[in-house]
Amino acid sequence: MASDFIWPPFTQTRTAPDPIKIVRGQGSVLYTEDGLELLDLISSWWVNLHGHAHPVLAEALYQQAQTLEHVIFAGFSHQPAEQLAESLCRLSGLDRLFFSDNGSTSVEVALKMALQYWHNLEQPRKRILTLQGGYHGDTFGAMSVGQSSGFYGPFEHLLFAVDALPFPAAPQASLDWLDRHLQQHAADVAAVILEPLVQGAAGMRMYSPEFLEAVCQKVRMAGGLVILDEVMTGFYRTGKLFAFQHTPVKPDFLCLSKGITGGFMPLGVTLTTSQIFEAFEGNSFSRAFAHGHSYTANPLSCAVANASLELLLHPETLQNISRIEEQHRTFLTELQPQKDIQGARVLGTLLAFEWQCQGEYGSSCSLNLRNAFLQKGLLLRPLGNTLYLMPPYCTTSTQLGRAHQTILQVLGETKSTP
Ligand SMILES: Cc1ncc(COP(=O)(O)O)c(C=O)c1O
Image 1 (cartoon, rainbow, N blue to C red):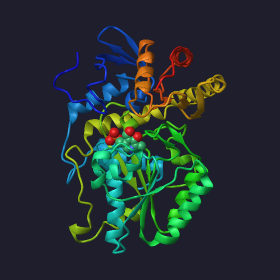
Image 2: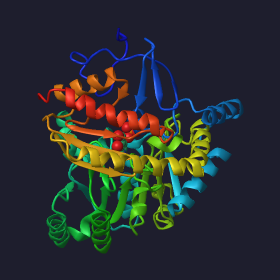
Image 3: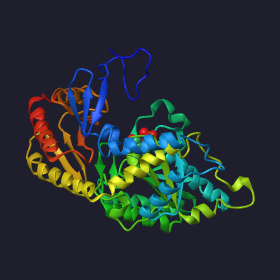
Image 4: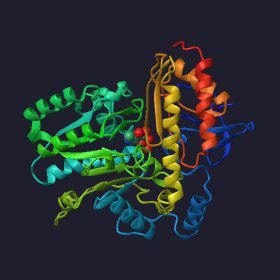
């Protein structure tokens, strides 16, 4: 029975089945109240990296909870935050890190910083470029830059205008659009915001590093800033620590969240350059970035993020990441000849393909598939008619191999009615 007191996210409660009660997790497996085992192939909404209830992360959290659970972060600091900021700056090549507490806020921060940067320079630029279909979160700024994702009908009249670059189904046509746009508006382009290489919520839509590089170069040439939203792609999901590292591009802003704590605690961060940071310095508070959240740089989140980062960079984890990619690639050769399957693709630990049923987010087709997978012990959550796998890195080759074969079996058995 569903709780009468909870309003669940992204759910039409009238038609959705009751939520499945999970009582514990270990490795890539979640255990239900009824004693069923579910292999978490979506890393619990893309957050989990090392498996559920990982003892090293649990210990880091426990130790920190006994030392300092939280402290106001304006006028105060602490070791876990300083360590995390230094590590992420070094690993990304950026210079300064601002803490918030989820993916949407990491995007809000980047947008506000980009716009205030131009304001502080007294060269106000107002236009934000986005990539059509991009999703950046559910707060108002994030909705504005993600409005072409199609989730925000009731709020459309309140979202600020953005210019959406066509998705590069035909890359040259998109770049030509961008050239034309910049010819007209170059001096007013404040920034471009993109999910680098993969648009997650749009259906794991992938595009080339060359396109990313070309867009960033053109926007830079016009004087605009580059915001990369790696809330989903960060922490090796695409086979590199950050997706932008598949290219020579270095962003002006990098938004991270989700995997940052290995899936243990909410945390968002926005990294930027010294050049941006310095534009906020001065003798007056009006130049400062007047933004902060109560749980900014929560020590528990930072401690577990430090522990997760250490695990992530361990050779065994890196081997697992390569192994998952290889296993996905082998599976691709089995998938590609299947008659109802299109667009099978792999990038790092991500595997995605379209199944022939037509369905939007939450359609009966994707719900039927989700249920069929659950009955076979697989936690998968199709995005419309896109099926994807994004397993935690501890998923064993046996678990993954079994999942691949079960997927083929379920797709073979499930009638493709919309
Ligand atoms: C690329 C991207 N940006 C931002 C967000 C928003 O993150 P959150 O749900 O933590 O607010 C998401 C969430 O799926 C995302 O995929």
